[in-house]
Image (cartoon, rainbow, N blue to C red):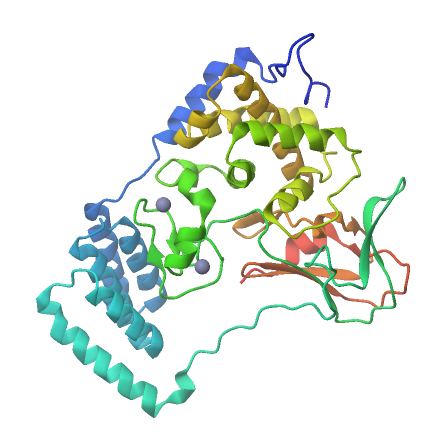
Amino acid sequence: MDNLWKKETGRADYVNLFSTSKESSVDMFVELLKMQQTRKDNQQSTEWRSKGNEFFRQENWEESLKCYNKSLCFAEVGTENVALAYSNRSACYFHLRLYNQVLIDIELAKNAKLPDRLLPKLEQRKNESELMKQLMPMFKREEKSEPKLSYEADKNIPCMANVVEIKYNEKFGRHLIAKCDIPVGQTVLVENDIPRIRDKTSVCYTCYRLHLNCMACPNCPDVMFCGVDCMNRNETHKLECGTFFPHIQLEGKMVIRTLLLAITRFLDVDKLMQFVEGALLKKPEALPTSLNDPKSKYHFFFKLSTSAPYAEALDDAHHFYKMAMNLPKVSSLFESARKKRFLMHLIAHHAVITKCNAITAESQVYVANVSSLLNHSCAPNIMSHCVSSFVYGETKRPIKKGEQLFFNYSITWASTICR
Ligand SMILES: [Zn+2]
Ligand SMILES: [Zn+2]
């Protein structure tokens, strides 16, 4: 960590963190990445629809749904391609007997320039679905319940049960302790709204729930949302939409996503710099005492462990910095030399935190703030699960008052269930 957050002698600017000799190769890498950027394109939308039709003829509803969703993502807004994708998706749901989903997609198709020639067919499907819904109420799809804490939430850290507390000592650093005896099968951590990347188009890009009637982002072909609410409240996507961001590998995406989160928390770079410099002055083990608002959540992330190998993270950080500076919103915010130097250090800091704390499972990576404080044991008493947008910790063995909560990193990595 030699140069991280180091300033130039006698000056307010941070030192240049990255090797100038690697500058051109990093630039070339980012230029190649930018070439992969995609846009709304009806030709691609039509190609995906044709592939979907092929699977549909083979009665492979799952694959045809994937293709129709792709077709929807590429469809240019205001054209009949949008309506055709919804209409075709409704036909798949009809065969899957998901009649509620059929009816929702038919409405979406009708509101999206559906060609008149298709209206009678859709009306017929709608009537049949309504009839089937009445005749067969057992086809009602049950919503999965969300994980809930088995105890009351801690007043200041609401994702943690009030039977657990955060402690610090030299040997274990920050860790979690049981405040009373806790039996097996109790949910003591439920974290939501955490930095996360999930490369799966069938889930909502904001709430990560599987939603069968997703709509595409109107400005890019890369992401889908479960509805207008999730589309509007996704502040970070507004900064990455329509760029090469979807083509960055998972870890890079995570580092840049946490930067975008920080930007949306503070909006003004000077305020972000002020916050970071204040947080750096605090003891390494100091965490915010509350996790009740977006700024304290970022503060918590910022103070997570940074014990990962710095040199390795630094090389990656150089690439991530260049990628971030190629996002138009980021380059316009960090326009001066002073702010660019600050950004280098902030990205390197996020890269080290990610290396040290991120959990990768299937096609996703996340940093769960409080769960990151759990230490490793080969005989853990906590198991971590990940369900839609939630990461939760459940006791797997009885824990006595005063005992530390442990989980097994390798088991968690291998067995985290992501649905
Ligand atoms: Zn959503
Ligand atoms: Zn978008």
